[in-house]
Amino acid sequence: MGCTSGFIKCFLNTLNSLNALVGLALIVIATIILGQAPLVYIVYLYVLGGLIFVSSILGCCGICQENVCMTATYGFILLAQLIISLLGNFGFKFNEDYIRKFASEEVQKKWDLELVEPGAMDPYQRTYDCCGRNGPDDYVSIGRATLPATCYPKENHELPHFTTGCAQSAGDKFLELFNYSSDTNWISVGITALMVLGAFYLVGRFRKQRRRYHY
Image 1 (cartoon, one colour):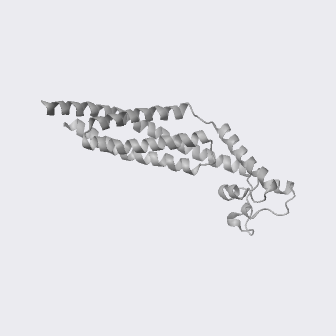
Image 2: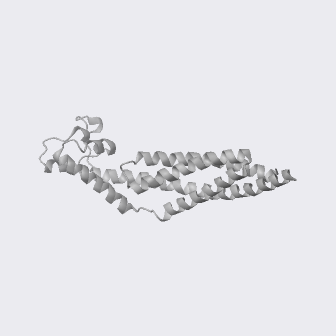
């Protein structure tokens, strides 16, 4: 096999390693925001992350063994992966208002539960360093004499309590996670486009090499 094909094999296997890390990163992000983001978005991240990871492993095996069928399958999976990534970036785009609205609705559900089950807001207040739905005054308005321990840093009443409401804090956190996953997805698109071209080039080279062996 020529120098060009050898270079592409090394290049693809290097990209496969990077792509596998990107796939794992998407899976980790989906796990972090599990229950804190729209289900369709979480499923999308899991499917895309798993597809990226599996295709990377398949690509390494096919390229190292110079297997035509395995490498061709790898190429088509990459093509499907590229299409899914582009659909995700353009078709399932969530804007800032949508994300903040979702965060606010989730916090509202917890606050409604807090009214009948004191302590329901504690997980959000611990996670997002916040107090109340829109601020500490929410507890005053419902007749609570004291703020919950989770309204204080490390639940220490000697420290100043949080002044930001959970609706705003959760919205800020959601935006941070969504922006990171979107940036990661664009990296994946760029890597995948290069890998599709390289994979189908190697398929052609492997077929020519196989035909030579038959003569």
